[in-house]
Length: 315
Image 1: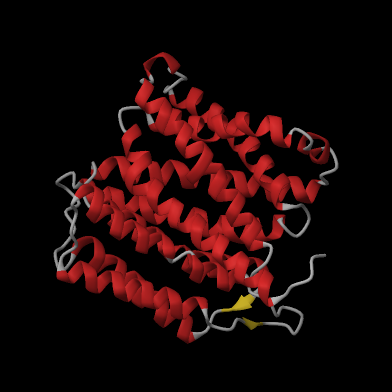
Image 2 (image 1 turned 30 degrees about the vertical axis):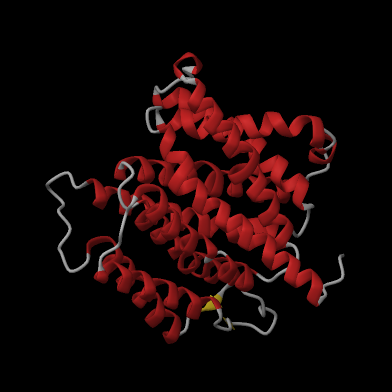
């Protein structure tokens, strides 16, 4: 096991910050450029292309996969299903729905994932939820509402695309929060390179099945040269590149530290959404965003309360 030092913690935190910033770039600048393609096909491309590019460098990981026991395969399947397939489908749908308008709102709502991660940890690790957590979680949800709707009521009957985008963003938050817990469990038994390789490989299979079953198919001929360029850039940077950085950093820091570092995602998203798309948040949306981020920070730094003495860690 690697010796944990202050230097390791610092470099790990910086790696997660960079990965989070890259995800902000992806959500605002890159993935929305693929909106002309069907969502299931996009999800397949964003996993299959990076997995193909990994082969020359990480081909040796195939041998390590044969050594996985049943528990490791189960955890990997949960990571691929939540953080790979379901989370990606939900966030891509959300980004496509807003049509380059207020993209930062979708990305900020995604930062509710620590709430879901802690709830799942409570279920899996039997940790007792405190009144403080419930209060701050409620504040985070209230902040997310202000960020999305201000003081207006959501329109459930008028086909409000922002409402549906917010709904999918919350699903993505739940899925990515679950993947954080499962990913930490996975990294307890395999190295970060193998974890990334296996995650992209299994998610590619799941996404292929989803694309075929959904009827979207695999219309490669419809992908333009510009769209292939975007897919390639995502594959090398904000996709597998960011996951490599994140998993590498996650092996060096606690999950609570990682969650705080991930706040670089909404910060970069708001800045990029303004610079690239000219989107501006209203005063109430800024207030909601600040309440959301502040609540997540407070939740992330809370000490867990175990139900038994052996349950001292949050993840």
